[in-house]
Image (tube, rainbow, N blue to C red; front, side, top):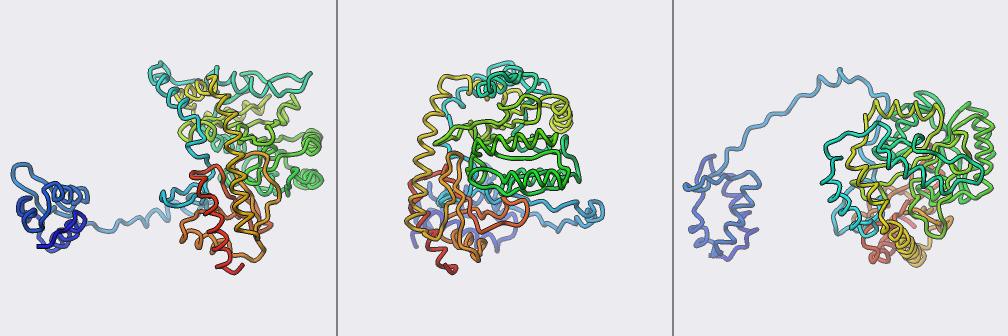
Length: 470
């Protein structure tokens, strides 16, 4: 007799089961122990594995039997082809940055911060407290929990220029994450078939939300100091657009922050054109060498709609964002939000409010700045050493990512596949462009897990780049 492991016994029994009729009784545990020179614990482990796979079933007091495998027939969904018709647009199933990969991969592709960068203790304590509160049995108003509305308004008010009217809780709409908010904003303020100006490159989720609504995107080239304001003004004139979506602070994907001069010119253009600036302050909590400076704090006539998410800052499980909008625009967006979502989960709002109200929240944000600084510089050092072909237009003053340009002519999809064979996940930059990409870029997340592997990531990327021709 050979001494087989539990895994080997599973393979042996699978082969035996494949030839046995349904209902055939397996040898007893005692017989298997004797035949294969295994311990009873090892045999039971193998049998549990086969039960979990649905190949055998245990009948207490009788024995273990080959399970009847149901005969399946192909399902016919062809009728849906006619019922559904031609889609208005083909939307991607999942963005590459959303993929979940095995733990042995070095993940530079994701858009979320690592668990180590989250206020885990605060979030868990908040969930524990909220679970014992009345909010778990109540629904909230469509506009949100009043106390959380007040917090969002007060946070922006801290940045308001002297002499301007600060936002109030009445101006705030609580949303189930910023992605949902973008859909409501685009539907309410722009509308299907209408033009909207947008920075290029920009957040892929905004491009997706616009496609879902049917908005026509008009790209405005951006740089380290912000968008080309002359082109912005010409685009407003040429298209008649009434909205511009942008990231003035720590843009996704580039990490750029608008200069004060560009910010003032953009505000002047938007006001002169009677238009809206949709300011997505997604990285409000991720400043490194600079702080977020919201443009919404520089005007009080409703030209700037301010979107501020807490999801990446608190936890992916807490999908809560706040939108500050003034005037009739707020009412239109609220009506669309109410039609789409009715209201945001009260317990999730309560958790978010609990966390940001704790003294430990500000301590966490201060610590986060240094951690992001260390990770960013660690990844930059690795690229400098191992990937001299990579060009970094600027060291981002905040955010979660590096925006790296590679030589023209490189096949990014081939590079991505080559990296994955070496267990490195990267994100090619094409999906961050609302039109054709202006170069060959990668978005590399320095806030992901295992920063100790960043040096190895750079080495792999350099090897893969040379393998595909550079």
